[in-house]
Image (cartoon, rainbow, N blue to C red; front, side, top):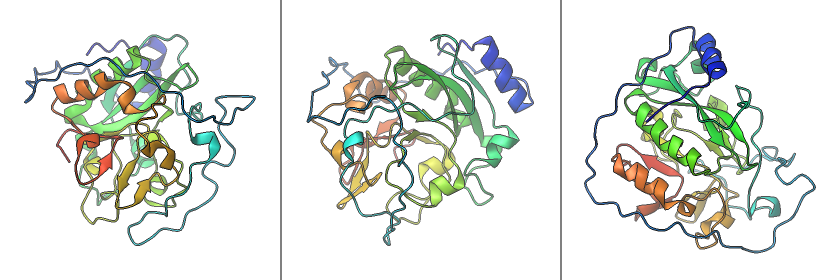
Length: 291
């Protein structure tokens, strides 16, 4: 991993954190338990005609405006994917940091600033202490073909290796819609069925109404483009309007399978991908612990 923070970004994060930058420690060599053979990346397959808009990357005004009624498993009923989202390629909403001035990769890793923790989903009952978490600010490539500045809270023990994978994704121009810290209400409140935020730490239980803590509640997992890579189990889909993305043969930008090397990069670090599980499909999900 070779973080190359832009000077302006480093100053902004230092001011937010109120502390000195934490220099990422050298990564330990990881021996994978199985040989990962890189395969040629699949071609993105044209699918059914989708609705064109005058501003192709503009976010529909109706996103996150229609609440879903939750069932006993804390999920809404699956719904048909709106035409505008069948091949979803949206610009991110404004984030905590301005977009970078160049397309140079940049990343910083610090302790989680108090104000960032306050707007996150962390609570006293979460299974991880703030001191066990790290705050990452890094560049990501958007669906609008522009670089953006994202933020992510994750487990401090895996922050550096997580950054190394996202750097490679950026170099390959893998598009990400949003990368920001999610709030308690976003994580545990109303569902709208259309969220698409790439995250690591979220203080919540396992998706599907289970009573055990998710690996996300300790920052030990990451979800990438959830709408493009949904969770599917027992007839339910999360996000609930992502039904069009259950079709993994129609490859569209933002789907994990369009860049098999990302799966290989995580596997080489000992992380597992939810797309290989047998009891459910969780294409968004990579875990440092296998859960």
